[in-house]
Length: 376
Image 1 (cartoon, one colour):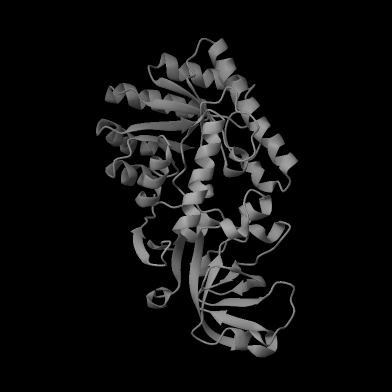
Image 2: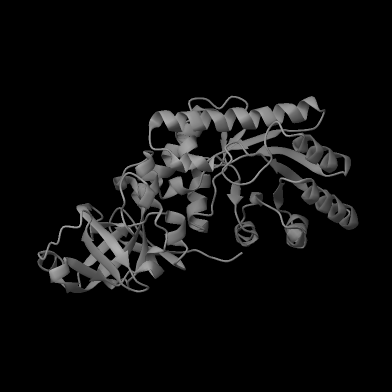
């Protein structure tokens, strides 16, 4: 089946993906919270439909392009989880007037003022959440900052709908032990709940408390006070997640199919047609306990080949070698020209973004094609 696929190509192991979907859904149900999956990883309608069928409610997006594509496919409960630029409010308004329940995000008074101004001019009430910084990782207002209440008041008094608070513990990607993951998950939960409590104490509405990342979602012991969790990369997993400890390489559902195109036996290299244009330039495992280079190497059957990685990459060339640097001239014998290999990605989001579609491998080995999209 694989022999007919032009390489490099993005492959989804459907059985692994469905197991990943079920695992996350069951965990969220056990913790009594709604799962609002982040669709930025696959950017694929067919994947999202399977998450929805498993019990997910609503979706999270990181671009308005995603919101538009998924709404056109019938997903009408959407959280745009990147602080809105005022210039994008016309696109938000168009989606909402078309029937999309699109919620937008802010973390400043200036952004709140812009939304109120636009809402009044358009005679429209925007649904808005405030981003909370619970770990100093990226953006958001700190839970005890006076700005949190000021933002809430500007929105509420300006006639907009303050939907709640949202946070993302991105620093969980720096963890590598179960204890550290549990600690950051509890920090994410408690600080976001603290922000919600402060808004309510100020007589401001805060019905939604949204937290999430794949590592914290799979590590939290309790989610008291939280109403929903967002997670995305779990649907495929990747080598960064394996290093963090929330999956194993055998659970990674996304890979890149590559073909051997040559060798440098004296250097112990096997050269494939999947360079960084296929794998992406993400080297997220370089600072983790196991550096997989540009990806871990599997046979065409998807089984990991111990010790082999894409050690270096050029635009269209991936150089497979031993991770420990050992020169092994026998690789030419093991993988003659024309051999197909599957490469597991460091960062599933970045690797998937290199492709316009997936080849989805069913339990019988047959491949079907699912479209994905890029853009903003």
